[in-house]
Amino acid sequence: MEIKRAGMIAIVGRPNVGKSTLINALAGEKVAIVSNKPQTTRNRVCGIINRDGVQYVFMDTPGLHQAKTQLGEYMVKVVRETVSDVDAALLLVEPVARIGKPEEVLISRIEAARVPAFLVINKIDTVDPMQLLEVIECYRKRFAFAGVLPISAQNGDGVDLILPELAPLMPEGPQLFEEGLVSDQPERQMIAEIIREKMLMLLSREVPHGVAVVIERFSERDNEIIDVDAVIYCERESHKGIIIGKRGAMLKEIGAQARADIEAFMGTKVYLQTWVKVKENWRDNLAMIRNFSYE
Ligand SMILES: Nc1nc2c(ncn2[C@@H]2O[C@H](COP(=O)(O)OP(=O)(O)OP(=O)(O)O)[C@@H](O)[C@H]2O)c(=O)[nH]1
Ligand SMILES: [Mg+2]
Image (cartoon, rainbow, N blue to C red; front, side):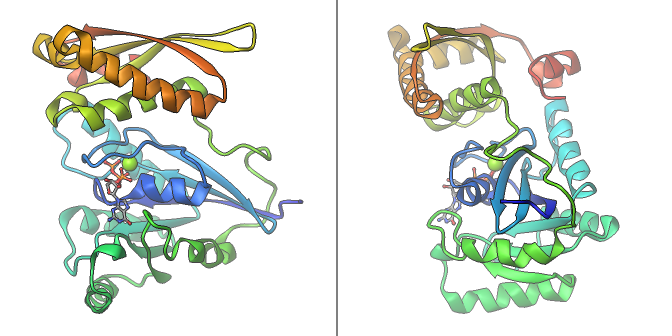
């Protein structure tokens, strides 16, 4: 099918509001990792959808928060740059009738960049529909949104209505990405992210936030097995102990769960080896941040 129009759409919002869950629901497969902990996403990740002659390139972004580290500053910068660089924005909010600090900052950015924006109220599965009216009223008073879309990214309710709303805003022009591509994220990065996702799931709050994963080897053996060597960097010796666990039990569990997902993602068998190393305070070390490909 010939693509006649193509555009980019930023998905922005506070941490944990469901931005990555939404981009996965839109793309129809997993392009971004999801967890119940805030500040899961660190980089801009795109999900590409071709529908009825239009190419939609969605940008998942880190949750906007008060940065406390250099890594946090980087994440906030990613959000700012993404908003000023797109044809439309989706401001994802919790179903709460109060505009918080992150929403206020994001609305100001959207205004400054003059991007058409939709208010997307997520997690409607958790509230009484009557409550939504108050949420809509509250946000409508603050900004002239191009439209309001109540959804549940988790169970898919309302997600189908997003593309038709965006279609008229997509500029005429050729496709931005080749057909068949679902994300611009390199395989290595997705594999590193899957390992980080398992740590966010299995470890308590502060440990996984100080973790970075680097894929040091990624090689195919006779087209049948992929060998992956991953190094997990953490911030403290004590964290290393927690990640490895009693007699290596935790690291084994992280590896087993990650391997299952990586095999599903790659469609082949995977042999995964992991190491844990300490890099003290890397989140405040710009050279290290770049090294871990947050740049
Ligand atoms: N009940 C409910 N939970 C949801 C919905 N969408 C996402 N969640 C949950 O909210 C949590 C956060 O989801 P993410 O998609 O990781 O949120 P995010 O906005 O990408 O978070 P950051 O990357 O940290 O900014 C996860 O536990 C999701 O399962 C929804 O529609 N309903
Ligand atoms: Mg996310």
